[in-house]
Each structure stands twice: as C-alpha cells, then as structure tokens.
Length: 222
Ligand SMILES: O=C(O)c1cccc(C(=O)CC[C@H]2O[C@@H](n3cnc4c(=O)[nH]cnc43)[C@H](O)[C@@H]2O)c1
Image 1 (cartoon, rainbow, N blue to C red):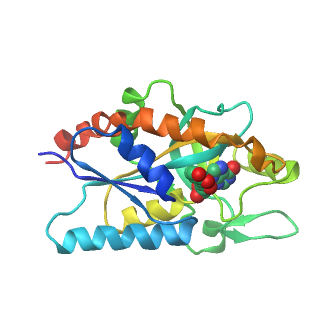
Image 2 (cartoon, rainbow, N blue to C red):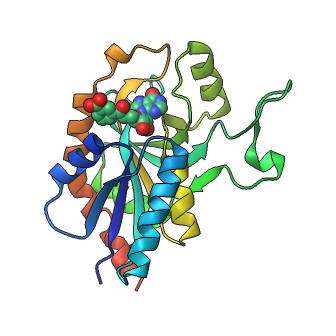
C-alpha cells in the first residue's frame, strides 16, 4: 500500500516550489509557518486532522531552503539531514551552552528515520548528508557561525523548522526526514547574497525524489 506523505515547508513559495516538481499523488505539501513553534503546531494539527478523517499520513518531511556551513554544502545544493538538532534550545552558562538533555528536559535531537533517509539518499545522490540545525534566530555573525560549527562538527546546514516538524512527527509515531536546498552560506548577515531562486529551483528539481525516496516505506511498513 502507498504511504501518504506530508511535506511541511515554512512559507508558501517553498510549498509551491515543491508542488511544481510533483507529478502524481501520495504527497501533500503545506506551508506551516516560520520557526520551530509554528512548524510543530502546524504539522501536529495537519497530522491530527488527517488521522481524525481516517486518512492518516505515513511519513513527514520538513523541506525548504536553508543556510549551509561554508565548505560543507554549496548554494543551490541539497542537504539531507542525518538528524535535526534544536541548537539553541537550552541554557547558556559560563562553561558554555547547555542543551535540553543536559538540563533534564528531553531530547534536543529530532530523529531521522533510517529507512526514509536511505531512500531519499538513493533518490538524491548529489545531496550532502549531515546534521541540520534548527534555530529560532538565523545566524548572522562569524562568531556564532564558528561556535555552531565547533559545537556541531557534523552539521551541514541550518534552518528554522526541522526540529519542530520532527517533534510533531515523533509524537504521532511517524517517520521523519528533513531536506534543505541551500539559499545562502552561514556567516555575517548579507540578505542580498541569498539565492532564493536557485534554492527554490532546486526544491522543484528534488520533488520527484520525495516520491521515489519514500517508496521503500510502503514495503517496509505494511
Ligand atoms: O521572499 C521570498 O520570496 C522567499 C521565498 C522562499 C523562502 C523565503 C524565506 O525567507 C525562507 C525563510 C526560511 O528560510 C530558512 N533559512 C534560509 N536560510 C537560513 C539560514 O541561514 N538560517 C536559518 N534559516 C534559514 C528558514 O527555515 C526560514 O523558515 C523567502
């Protein structure tokens, strides 16, 4: 049986870019808002509504544009998350940042489903894989960029929604993955350097892989 997939983007232009590349059913795309709170609330509502209607989703993807750590992914390129980390959820201390788990409040990592990631990697062989950080504040200084790169040596990109979407998917017991197409490099803020057109075009080009990359779930989960 085919698995129904929910693709959650932040804003409508991202959703439209994904839809533009989709031919065929099974994938629904919705813009749920910018930032982890809007993403979690919006995704949870869509999942609950679908379940109540008797048409539940079988997997959830967070997708959209993002910033890449220089040297780890290129503008216009793709990043598939190995994990979606709530990088600014925690507490500062003189000894450094204390993540959620060290405070005893839960898991700061949105877990990516291994079978879903494997399917997407096979369907998107040019994608870089690495951690994708979820931040409420877009990084805009070299100091913060360096600090994040040091705290997360496996990070390839940052965005603002992945951990929120992952939390909603996890609470619904659904497999989760995150795909980012790169609009900018992380560092001193220069909004004029963002290449949204290239990143949105990459989302459209990657969209068919969201179907082929999730086919394995249909056979893996009866
Ligand atoms: O103005 C437009 O036409 C437009 C079209 C598509 C997307 C946007 C956005 O502003 C997207 C906001 C979205 O972008 C993610 N993002 C992108 N780069 C970064 C970054 O360096 N650090 C964190 N987040 C980034 C983020 O997920 C936002 O939700 C505008």
